[in-house]
Length: 316
Image (cartoon, rainbow, N blue to C red; front, side, top):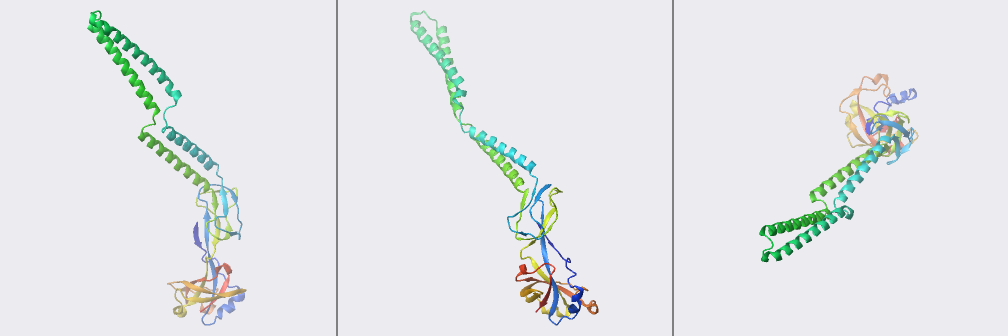
């Protein structure tokens, strides 16, 4: 949203019927007008406008839907991001578990075969060892049987270590990496969700619609204003005072503001122009146009009771 002061929009505030009155202002009384600031509510992203929910002059409240952009692409991006989150989380969870028994079953069979070979090797070594004292078995044969038995024992031990490793979870650094990938996927999904949510623009203030600038079916680029809104309480009074009366005013000073058909109210001076300018011809008479005046702005106590562009009378 950006704030645009509607300066000069209501410059022609005194109708011809009021020129005489404007020219005959009493001392300490000045003619001014109500000015308003507007907020341009722009499209945060480029896309096709599908709906504009408010019209000119409509009251808007904070959080109220204002307009929507086509969200087909963003919805698809979110679906893909959510799928990647599920995949990454499943991988991270899987790494905390050991292998399934079905995956370990071939290793169990291999271990049974290795144990059988070990039993046979031990039996052969024991049998020939009993014959060695009688001289029926050479030392070389005993060494060969002993080596076979040791090889069988090593084979069984290796298979058992493999089975234990399969039943354990993945290494800690692998689990950390998997969790980090899951978190990154979650951040991508959150970004995709945010982009989708931004396609439905809601009001961030209370106020009144000034103009509906775009219609459904139009393509808008990011930053293009779609509606303009007068924020609640952002109206102020502008008036000019002659150079001779400038010393009567200071910032923060209270003044009296009245208008046709409305109750008078107090306003506080918020700004005094540091530079003089020529008298606006619609406020002062032709005779006085050559005089220099200073612009003063004041914030009314009840801005909601005034209308933008409305002529007002200001008094000290």
